[in-house]
Length: 98
Image (cartoon, rainbow, N blue to C red):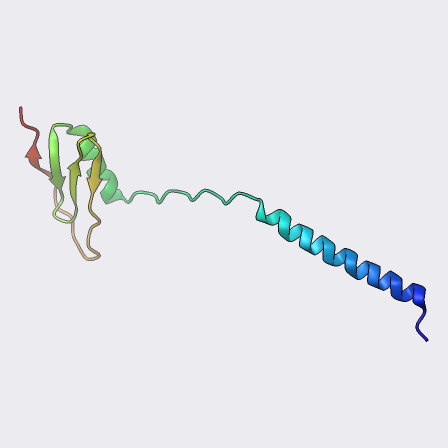
C-alpha cells in the first residue's frame, strides 16, 4: 500500500509548483510592451529631409525617385523610392508664393 504521507507530500509539491507557474505567467501579463524603436532613415531620406530643412521656401522637391511635399503645418512628407531607382540631384519643383 502507498504511504499516505508520501503521497500527500508529493501532491502538495505538485500543487505548489503549479501555483508558482500560474503566478509567474500572470505576473508576466502585467509587464508593459516594449516601445518599438523608430526605423532609421536611409541616406537618401536624410538628404531629402536635409534639403527640405535647408530650403524652407520650397513646397515640393525630389530626386527623381522620391517626392517630398510640405503640409499646412510646414512638416515634410516624402514618398518611398522604388527598389531599383537611381536618385539624381535634388531639385525644388514648387516654391512658396511670395
